[in-house]
Image (tube, rainbow, N blue to C red):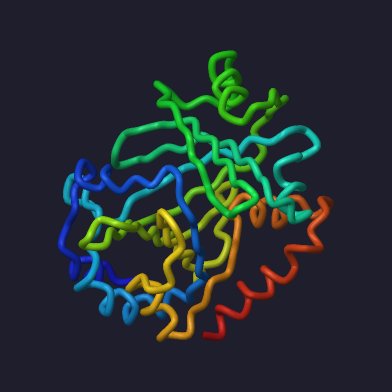
Length: 244
């Protein structure tokens, strides 16, 4: 994707964007072919601003996912359990920030993200980190690092500061490229509204909601022995994106 399309947007600072952090929210994901982005972004540029940090608009992220030895979190998602847990350490490269993050999804489709800042990267969770996870999730887990991913992201904020959208590309798992055509758009709202300008722009371009967990797809792609029948449809959707 050509960077000039990101220059169409007026900037928004991290401090301004904190007012629409949406730690409790409804997430709607869309899978897009990278070739479709220029048209979508041009249409969105008048209604959204873009996060800019030190004049950078395309940010880099590194994430370490944790799970139990039996991959409890992965299997809950695969088995379509409505309540789900995700534990990760995420490094926000340009912001020079590092957080332990716990995401809980309830049976009403709401996502609640809690996080605590870390001083340095670690693969091993200490007692303080494990206690934070237990306090947040309500359960004590035996956790180990399972999967690493890296990607680039830019973030849009609507001019009324009511919603955010993250656009992820160049996704890699364990330092291997996943799919160069795949772009993941995630619309984050306090409550679902299909009247969102971005929702309508995507619909106009025949892009419709499709759920996808980067963690689960990465596990299914790199651990062929794990149960993954319920994700085969999503892999087919990713393959179809190449034809768009």
